[in-house]
Image (cartoon, rainbow, N blue to C red; front, side):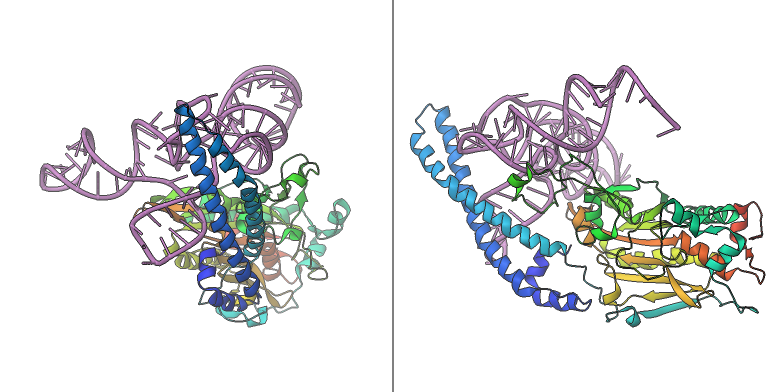
Length: 448
RNA sequence: GGAGGGAUGGCAGAGUGGUUGAAUGCACUGGUCUUGAAAACCAGCAACGAGGCGACUCGUUCGAGAGUUCGAAUCUCUCUCCCUCCGCCA
């Protein structure tokens, strides 16, 4: 969420900056609601102030044993007006909050203009693309050939967009996870965490998946629990909801970014503890609504995949240095695996909702003859921190201030597996094991 | 799943209808003392929001939501979470 005060003060600038990412900010509607809010809020608070003052006087009079009839009459006459005013204020505040919650982050000044991925800018290219003396196969063919990727079995067990990985390929998948975790923990100074894979609405609100992107998630309904109220939102329709019991849902995590970043929710962290750097391996679940027809074959786009996620919580002054560092950590994995890749700076229109700046790492897939995203590293600045009240104490002011949060894949395990299959394939359809992984594979040098 | 107990500021912990946003301790910040540090002493210190150029003023918040009341941390209801005991269980 953006700082509401900042929006009010620089409403024209904000509109322009948001338009860079293709977001149409309805300035007139917002300004109109703001004007109403201001008027009604001031009036409401004046009424509350009067009520509080009179109530205090009643207390004093009663203590002195004097009559309170007069003053009681006066204060009760305020009652209805106040209730009405409060209700009106809540309604307007609700509308404003809904607007605010739907506004994406503002792109950093260094982010290139543009609307689609065609406008993304290549920042760097690494590694040499292997010159095959045969036609390289894609991972689907390689998987079928060895029998180590079984899409049919997964379809039987569950449905489309799932896969069963077997034998030594499953072992390679596991080796990748170990290798990534060990590298980040031992060489990059991360704290490893293991987290719940089911998360609540508050967590998803905090990182920005809710309320806007619920259709991308797998929902687990819970009966009888109270619906989650978004922190700023005030209660309006509470009376109606009493009978018609709503449910607070649980969700399968779409990325470990959600539980890990939410570790800082509602905390005030001392400056000496910063920066916090977490690494977390988890499965990720995505409904892939709206991606019908995209990557339907193979394991590029699955409902379930595994990922090693990097999360930083940092001092606001350091977050752009942190973004470079975090991206570098993800790159290290590709470099150690000797997989050719490029770094892309996403243009304003191609970035995710919460990001102020994003680098994508794209790995070369010879079977598809193109680069494919294998990591996405973002600085969310204080956008998520404001939603989840993740703060640090500034010793200069002795006040809590918002942290900056960053996240990035280091890396997506399934796609890394594909990249290894396709880049390390031999002419007879086997897969060579990269040097750094052999120790995790019991010394095996080739599978398939 | 059953029975009890609890949730208060960064942390610990008082507070059961009336100038209580909340005692006290720790932590933190500033100062005195000291060559410096520690100790001691003194002072300050909740968050969020609104209004104002500003000194400042006002509002909201004691797990969450609703209710009773002129007035709720305190009373009632619902929910969540934590602890203890029993049951079940990887």
